[in-house]
Image (cartoon, rainbow, N blue to C red; front, side, top):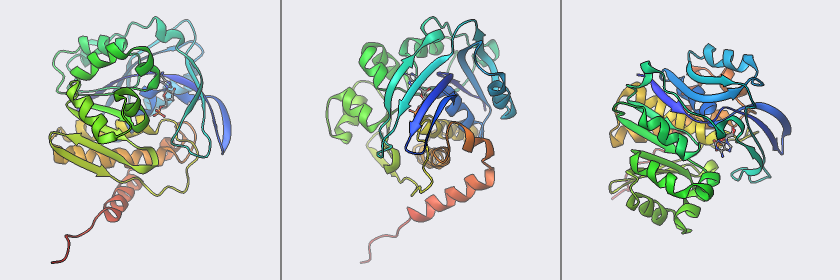
Amino acid sequence: MTLLIVGTIGLDTIETPFGKKPDILGGSVIYAGTSASFFAKSALVGVAGEDFPKEHLEFLKSKDIDTSGIQILPGQTFRWSGYYEYDMNQAHTRDTRLNLYTSFDPKVPDHLKKAEYVFLANLDPDLQLKVLDQLESPKFVAMDTMNFWIENKRDKLIEVIKRADLVLMNDGEIRQFMETPNIPQAARKLRQLGAKAVIVKKGEHGALLFNDGEHFAAPSYPQEELKDPTGAGDTFAGGLMGYLAKTRDVTEANIRQAIVVGSVMASFNVEDFSLERMRRLTQKEIHDRFAEFKNFSEFSALAK
Ligand code: AMP
């Protein structure tokens, strides 16, 4: 089953305590699509400029990703520059240049309009809505966002949230958005705004699911190889949605399973800059790490 994803295609300049890399491949749709491609066919919608290196498109094709919804236009590719200090849960933005995304008119190719599984990755909510409006009858729509859009397009963001089955935000974002320091309260408020299910990503502290009366906590991986957390959230969401699209099962039990898949994928992605770790990742490594997650989060009932 194909997973349709819209988001940014970017060239990132990243600085972490482990190095500085200019103009490396990034963007929300790139991370999410690559991660999802390990489980399902992913099809991307986005825009890049003529400055976007062709080898990056070749990389996507090598992952069997459908790139027919990617427009290459005269102009500059989206650019984001950020840095992390020792607390790598917190990305600090130096500069965001939307470039071609300011005038982007996303076009979902005809053969993808019937997509049932859809991920609206971090992007201008107006563009997320434009993509949603072109789809015939999506079965399961997830969306992500970030402080940039919370600050600049709050009302449009709420419109997207109302139309999504699953809303992903990180802990800092949901606190900011719902104006409360308490995460369960923030998730409840977001659900009152119209979100059906909410996942709060807590970086190196795991992820929480808030659904109808249900709560699930996924652990994070005790990662000692952390080099660059950029894209962890998108990689998490791509793995989660790729797994849902592959299994075609959106029950609570399977969403829990998919959250762990997402956590596994994100745990690999942070081991290197850009998509470098994803390039060499194997299915066996994914299976082995999933088993590790199962082991370290399993415990028995309390003794009588
Ligand atoms: P994350 O998973 O949150 O670490 O996402 C990192 C990616 O988000 C980077 O590769 C950036 O290119 C991209 N990004 C940064 N700012 C924005 C924005 N305002 N809208 C969409 N994508 C962004």
